Length: 316
Image (cartoon, rainbow, N blue to C red; front, top):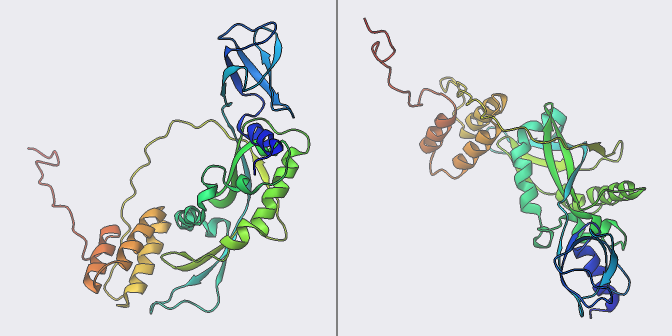
């Protein structure tokens, strides 16, 4: 049952202070001219919209007597970074996983950015699509409407892979609000959302990876100011790394693992994942070798035809 208190709470979450208001018509004793713009200061306990008009007047609007439109403010971005760690169970040449994992952190996790980000997207529940972790926030305070959304993600900085809580704010946080937000997100990383995600198997070309967004000691968020994005430049296309098949173990998992490592060392982690996915779906051994040879240069790779001297500009 929707009580009036719940209705007021809902209206406050939908229309936060700072929203712009366009007056269409009103029944005020001293009416504000139709078409006037103003700024919403709050939705009070009676469900009225308190507005500071650009003309200098201040009035209260209600949905029964007044007609107006509300425009939410543009969200600001706040990113909270924190260290990641994980365990990788290496797949051997026979396709079996090792009994003991390799501990990974920072730069060691960097090659698996694409795999982790894909797992994060698959882990998201339907009800989290709009607000992310803020969908589960149950406190009746300003964070309810100030923080429009909060999603866990991963980002690469100076060769290190970091966890990040990407938050969209409708208004700047004040006082202890940032502390309360980080406390809530810490709880999600440790006991809520994170407890489920750390048990999720993340398939990689090297084996199965488990990633933890929280560690008991030490753990803290680092506030990183968001800089305006610079115009993107087209990255140079890296050359395919070379790999000789002659003399290698004929096991396809061993060949795939070697090719994947070469691609990641060459700055092509996405190609390594794409190659592995295609190999796992291939129909036979020879098709798998052909796929690998598309990504790394082997004896089976198709080489472009050599150009003549005239084509190279060596005309006499």
